[in-house]
Length: 56
Image 1 (cartoon, rainbow, N blue to C red):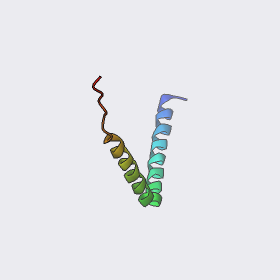
Image 2 (tube, rainbow, N blue to C red):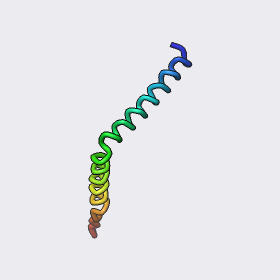
Image 3 (cartoon, one colour):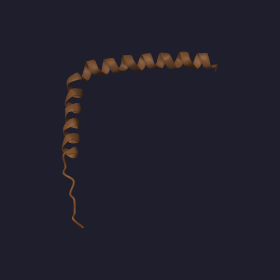
Image 4 (spheres, rainbow, N blue to C red):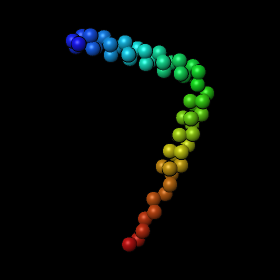
């Protein structure tokens, strides 16, 4: 397969993945937002864990 044909196939795949992403966001918008908030809260609480410094 020549490089030009590979590029065309890769481009079409990217277009299809973008379309799939759009469809999934349309279907699961609220669920995705909930998941993002949950992940953000988990990351925030992990980041806010104080570092314990030992004097020795």
